[in-house]
Structures are given as C-alpha cells and as structure tokens.
Length: 158
Image (cartoon, rainbow, N blue to C red; front, top):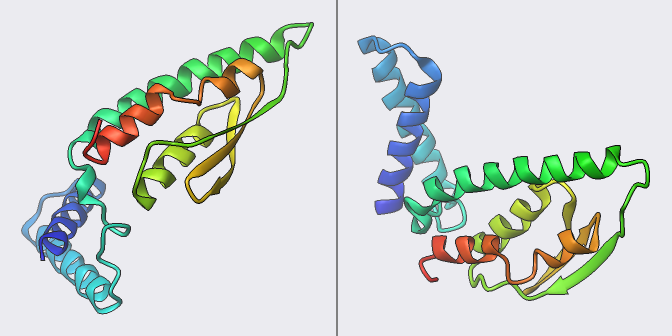
C-alpha cells in the first residue's frame, strides 16, 4: 500500500511539473490520471521494488547531481583524448564484482557506468560486470569506485 501511495504522489507531482498550470480542473485531472495509472499498475501487479524502488528514497536526489558532474568530467576527458593528435587510447576490458545486492541497484550501477562517456557496461552477468573503457585508466576506475559506493548507499547500506 505504501508503494501505491508513493507512486500516486510521484505521478501527481510529475503531472504538476509537466503541466505548469494550476487551475482546479487540471489539478483534478492530474489526480484522476495518477489514480488511474496506479490502479492499472496494481491490477498488472507491477507496483513492486523494481517498478517503484522507494527504498532508494532521498539518496537518489544526491546521486543524480553527482552523476551529472561525473558525466561532464568524463565528457571533457574523452574530448581531450579525441582532440589529441596522438589519440592516446588503450581500450581495456575489466571484470569486477559490484557491491550491490538488489537487481535495481545493479541496474542503476551498470546504467550509470554506461552513461559516463568513455565507459560502457558490456555484461552484467549475475553479480559481475564486464566494462569496456576507452583507456585503461577509465576502465580500472570502475573497480571499487565512488559510483559503486554511492549506489550501495542508495540501497541502504554503505
């Protein structure tokens, strides 16, 4: 029930942010639409930890700004590599075990690696990642990284 209420609140806030209008009719339409979506989601039995991971709570609001900063830093580094006439790349594959225990945590970690320029998660098999980096440094930086720690913190453990 708490997941349904949380989903309802998130959907309604999302509606308000996208609408930008706060007339009584549109606000009531937002409530009605959010209720309908929650009802459909409950009927399809998809209001669970994977579909709506409230366990990450407010940590996600700390993680996103940090991830955006890391994406910008990595984009700058990749730009410098591309513009260098010597093209100092050393493509590297690295395999490591992330510290996340939930499927949602593993997906967030793997997708965060892929969002960061210069690295891509090739395989997330069970509890092990295979990551390709444009340089050996960028690939090795994924092992035991700050990203791993922050996603684990979002799971409720440090």
